[in-house]
Image (tube, rainbow, N blue to C red):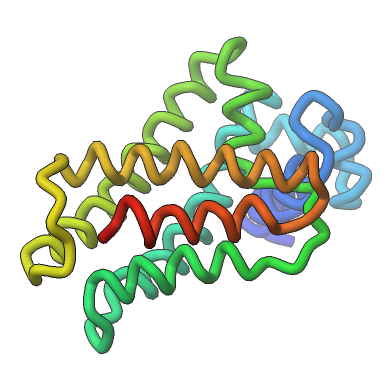
Length: 191
């Protein structure tokens, strides 16, 4: 493999492992063994496990953002329909419910200990907020929402509530919390 290929392979492997087991439960040895590369190769591409974790989170967000943007920018639907489609795609998960969302998982596991991770998580949450706020703003302009609440505030609240629902799915081992989130959002908040 080329150098870039090895780096990408380590990140892809790390994404699977860190999402399934968490940051602290995976050592560099676990990651390199799963990637089938020598341990020294890891440090050729990453200064530290912390930097690796931030890069894995970046890859996770890129994948999620791409899918979100596809739904939220689909002009064949009204803005409110786009928001409903976006959250419906999240609420229709059939399990298993043991992994949760890497953004929420890393927020709980790493934010207190790592400035690098806290900054990366902050950037991810800000970008996610802006994506949702743009669609909320469009829905309000189209007359689909009557709320006078700031779109960024609504978007941030939706993310906060969604991440809480995802954590609840890990406890309950079913999708009830996501369905409840979707029901309340579109019958009480985004009306």
